[in-house]
Image 1 (cartoon, helix red, strand yellow):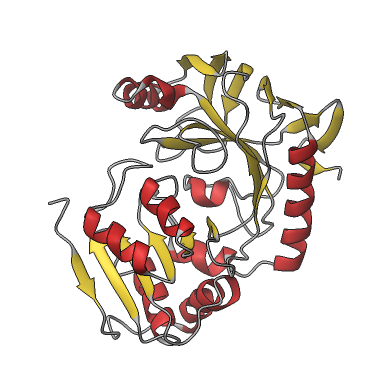
Image 2: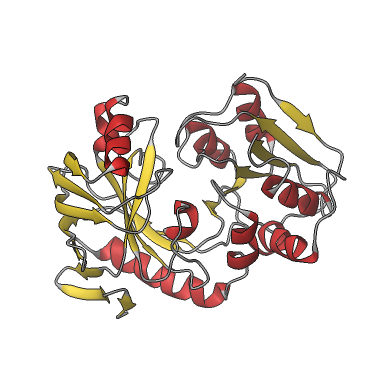
Length: 333
């Protein structure tokens, strides 16, 4: 089933509404700068191909006739590699849009395609409502705050995160480079999420310490109550909570040990995003922060496992080298 791949090149799957077309154009023209005759590949799975992926396919096709929709059953978890046939299509394309339920962002296929000069937007778990709501922010303002934060991250050494729910943890970012997800994906080799809006960094491995309370959202797990995660030497030591905590523990038990290592710290910068069960949007919510576990070798770290999952902290206070840059979810920079 996994390798049952369908390729569609003819448009007309369905007629788009004006709102859908506007959201699609924001992705393919405003963010990716697609040009006529460029090779465009839209990767979808069985949950997205006739809805969200079709919006992108039809709008991309209106600009470049050389647009293909590739559909397969999809990854079973974030970070799982796509089939070889899709990887090869990605390597040959000018632009790729990844629209699957689980994320292909942190895969070797995505990284290799970018190294070949492909421009890639990843939209795991996006919904039609999310597309209409979040793909047209004030990109200039979003870029300003996001770039400012990443500059601070790159120059910073030590981060402390606290929150009303009980988060109190530290991590080291010395020598690592901050990354700005601003939605500008026009340069060869560019990669980012759509919706855009986060400043993030790969912390130094085995430096995170403390208590992390996930009270906003967690990737592909429905929170039934906040999860309390104890972290020591950069690794998860324990997880408490109800069903969500049990689900996460079960996931991690089936994966390599480094799947439980802290791999990312980020701050959301998109005013149009809102906290929901879809981490793609939730982690972009203005003034929130997130911690991820698993793979980070695709953005400056050293962890290489087939897993990447983010958890959201609401109303955080973030202290960088002794100076508050975020206080209760309000920016101070």
